[in-house]
Image (cartoon, rainbow, N blue to C red):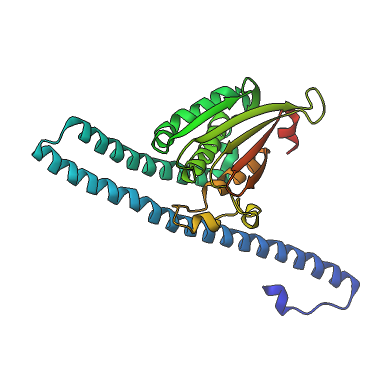
Amino acid sequence: WAMEMIGRPEDAEGEAVYDAVRAIAKCANDEVAAYRRQVASYCEYVETWVHEAKTPLVAAHLMLENLDEDLARGVRPQEMREKIDALTEETDRVEGFIEQALFYARSETLDRDYVVRDVPLQSIVASAIKRNARTMISAHVAPVCRGLDLEVFADEKWAEFILGQLIQNSVKYARDDGAQLVFAATRVNAGGAEDCVKLVVRDNGCGVPAADLDRVFDRGFTGENGRSGKRSTGIGLYLVKRLCDKMGLGVVARSERGEFFEVEITFPTNRMHYFES
């Protein structure tokens, strides 16, 4: 703030030097402010993460105590299996929170952990579904795949994580009966300058109110659905948008209340896109 205590010179040479130094000072102050916002944002996320991660851990400890008692009473194998499955589901939730935190941290330095290559879209979707299979089975959500016999130019690990966040978000708001999660891909403008592959991930859950749709990718935003008793941190879709932006992928959300919620991801097929961005 030294420039705030120095008066503006009256001569032309002094004015030029003053303006140059003031511009440099402003850039430095803006950079410091940006880092402060980044640190504050990360601290807020860590606090939220700790709060959310404690819940499944406490539940897992209680389940383990109950299992000890059940073993002493000689509980039937089928009943024991159901309790073990419930315990596994809670540990999966903890693992998901840990993975989310790791990707949140890595997103600050994406260039250090980013390998772009041709990857079969079917492989990425299948890996994401397999990784979240237990969660989908527990919520009775059936995956439906259409037109995935295409290749995209992307980082497989990061793309799989993005799809995993979309799966978890859809499962959270799935309907009780006949829940589906559709993965449908199409190639647009093949051979043209705007050649790309569009992947739509669409569920038939409760949908998002029109008033909330423009903010679903905001960090910490849970909307009306999140306030109605669902467990939501507002981090999953924020990371989807953040990572897509980092990798130069297009992402847009659409919804109709009570009918569906979908996210469309655009994978450019022009490899020069990554060098230009």
